[in-house]
Image 1 (cartoon, rainbow, N blue to C red):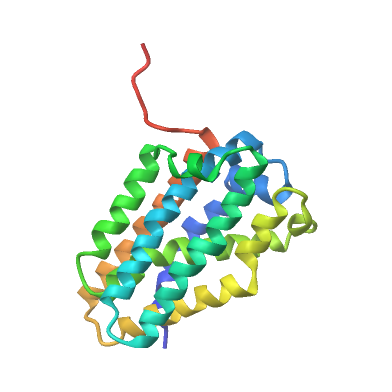
Image 2 (cartoon, one colour):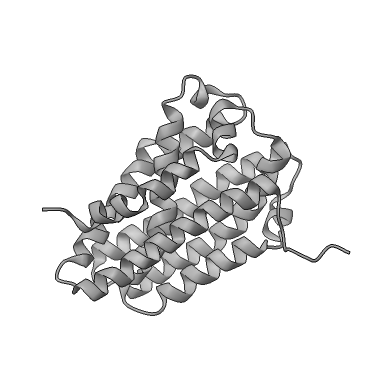
Length: 226
């Protein structure tokens, strides 16, 4: 019998495959990505992660058992102290202070993406929170593991640490726990309820592509040209 996560993956795999073909992601994998583009991603992703942590905290608040509370509590801690520390380490190489990172103004894509997740996570129960956060964690692990298969990617003097983070055993285990939780909360749901959750995962997958595109083009807010 197909699990709900397997159903989700079948739906989003073509979208996620496009991430691996995107020039920004390919540039991380082969080490050719322009560092100014990476710096733009770095700053936008840092403030994205601040709101992403709020989503995990919302998961703690909506959880109905200690196991779920524990996982979301771990995700809060790991995001603040591990994933965001990776960003702070990279920022230091660009001479960007932690305060400057925190004060980054969000691009239109960043604002749209985080607003969508926060809005939908608050509409229903814990299943809406899980659906809202699932794509980011799962797709970054998907990308990290794919890039880790490229010879030399994990050893690259600049981008190797990025590949190591998102392909790591620890990050993979947290991803797997989220996937398992998605399967558990989906049990007994009606098709209409499952479709609502699937829609969130699909739309956040499109937002992820938009985020890579925003980083590649170093976009902020579109304005008419004079």
